[in-house]
Length: 306
Image 1 (cartoon, rainbow, N blue to C red):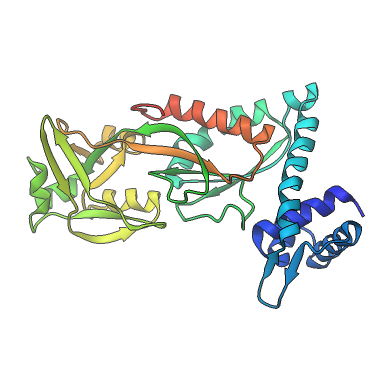
Image 2: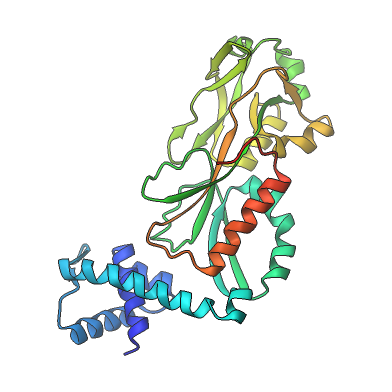
């Protein structure tokens, strides 16, 4: 029995709550995971997991051992990456999930320089706005706009994206150009609603000018849960959009979108990078986090940093 492999298998079973899911994330067979955990229990002479047909529950001894295993695996990773060559060249697979517009417009165009800097890293890039189970799907980190709803995650605030209200010329020709935000509540106007996967509909936006504040929910004919689809709906004239400036800039320059209420301010959208609290921040994750913060700061309009 390879004790490190056995510890890793045991830790993944605890984190995913399933031998099958652990096997999938480790890319080995369920039989092999079972064997490793059984061999570990035989060596330790304690029961680490209670298994039923429906679920796997960690025992009291298993929970205590799991905490020790996490620290040990982290120390091993630190020992390997502390070597001068490893520290200079982090290596291995890194699994991340990012919103589709941020990936398309900001991160992917900057990736060639990152790949050249860290040629031994393999980046598995999930592109979505869906809610991701970081533990169950073995994802190292996610980037999301808006507050992180899961309080168990460690979240790093990497910037605040400036927002604006936009609409297509076709929409404005049909519905009229609103001179005041309250006009968006009129029967002739519509918004495109973004459907947050983790929280349902988006909260009302509040526009501010001096001491005047106008909260707006608005009527909609279409709601979407993907950033690129949200932008496409606005370009098609389906309603008014609340967009980060990095998404709207090129379309506004080409006349495909028109900025509304330029003298009003929308609260900026906070941008967070989040990872599981029991996931060791390895060298490869650390350099990715630093790179993302650098790229976002350079390419996307940043109002402030936390």
